[in-house]
Length: 154
Image (cartoon, rainbow, N blue to C red; front, side, top):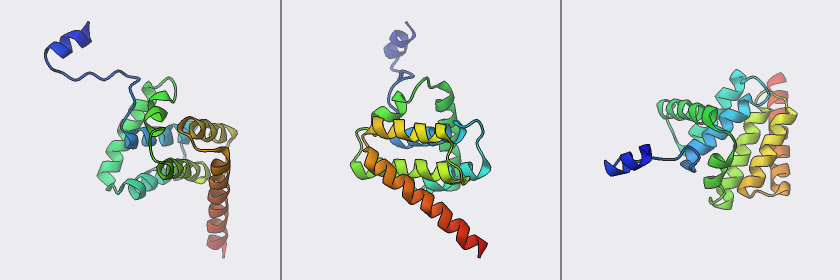
């Protein structure tokens, strides 16, 4: 009924399960990924912010707003469909970049919880990134984290 009245007055209504704009969908997935093991660590949150800034060319204020909206969308979501539906239509390189960002968040705290691994696997499947590509990206990000920590130790 509300939708009918809103249409009558020209208001836009978006179903809560409608596919989101890609940046917001990616941010929501990253926010969910950071908390899937029970706690979002500061290094994971910094990694999300930096990944979004780098990938989308956003400033600090824009990223903060995007992450705030992503948290809201994530808290309302019952599954990954509204996040993955739009992302599945992106170009292959963009999909790979999304999975790369996810692995960056996973390894930001130098650990890989099985729930994080499972979430990246599910999202990769939903958006059409192959198991091989997902595994290659995982290994690259894991090696990158270990190489960075070894350099810091020297």
